[in-house]
Image (cartoon, rainbow, N blue to C red; front, side):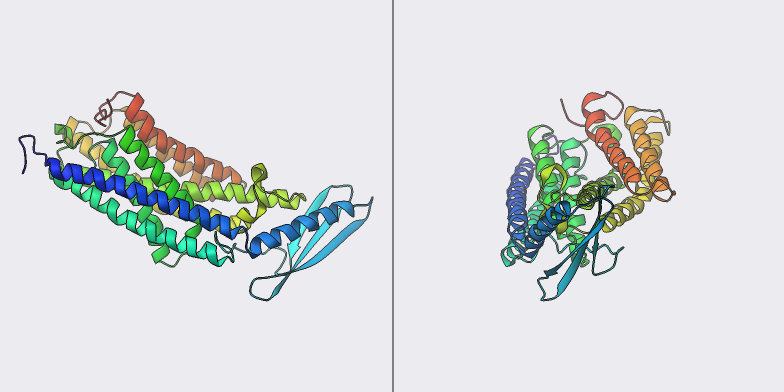
Amino acid sequence: MLIASGVDPQLADLSNKLIYAAMAVYLLAMFAHIFEWTFGSKGAVAVRSTEQATLAETVAAAKAPEVVKKVTVTVASAGGGTTTLTRTALADAGATVVTSGRGDNDEVDGPGAAGSSEKGDLAGRIAISLTVLGALLHIAGVITRGLSVTRWPWGNMYEFSCAFALTTVLAYLGLLVAKKNVRWLGLPVTVAVVLTLGLAVSVLYTESEQLVPALHSYWLAIHVSAAIICGGAFYAGFAATALYLGKGWYDRRIAEGMTTGPFGTPASIWQRLPAASTLDKLSYRINALVFPLWTFTIIAGAIWAEAAWGKYWEWDPKETWSFITWVVYACYLHARATAGWKGRKAAYLALLAFACFLFNYYGVNIFVTGKHSYAGVG
């Protein structure tokens, strides 16, 4: 039964319970992915990592002035084949070049989080099943929130955060359905979703209520929906970019004769990830694909502003930071196609662009006063 304010309290309460249930299931999925990575570290990839560590020590001991030392080791693979690893140590220069029997310039994607471990693979499958269950609960929570006030359920930061987290999960599951080898994204996705929903229910929560007059428009469905989709895609691009930088750092450490990843992390973690070039391409393709939608989001917002306030653009803080985010992503895409700026330099721009997006959402809405100050955070 609807009360005078146009809010159905029973549906609103059901929505809250469904969101909490989704959080709990996502948390279980996160732990399942942690087990997947843990069990995978004990598989064949970890054995190979140990043998490479021994190889690095052999090369270091074999250094001699003005002499080129080559050490070749044949490592058995999980499928019964063999891979030849060759380290060339240049004595005076202190450099170590790592090649493999597949070809000097080949970059091979890792086997994934589970490696060759059956237990790891089982944990990963359980994590995916839990993620699907969490997504179903999440969808029901978002829908019932909207039904409780008979409007689109993203009129404040709490509702936007719930929808943003859902979009991130659905994008990840969509890649899996498309047979993309992205199960390694499961852990960063579930961690981000749990944190986003946790912040939403603890800090950003707003009671289900009707919108302020400025938001009573069909542009709410168009403009905000586009922004939500962009947010989920930008996060996926950010995760791929961060892992690309980490994998590149790991590759450089191995080339220098070290045996661990960045900050002393086990080498087996990085060996199970896709090649650095694969991560770089994935990040670029995601950001390039979503950039036109972000452009449309800004244009749609300007049209809505003219209808609501009489002007297309007034350099409101939200408008300004949306434009800044657009400029930085445009610089990244341009740099990615420019000689001398590919690789790490362009990746740093991608990280900066995502930081601008986050500030535009959290920072501007919480700390800056403007015409968009109806986020529901008191």
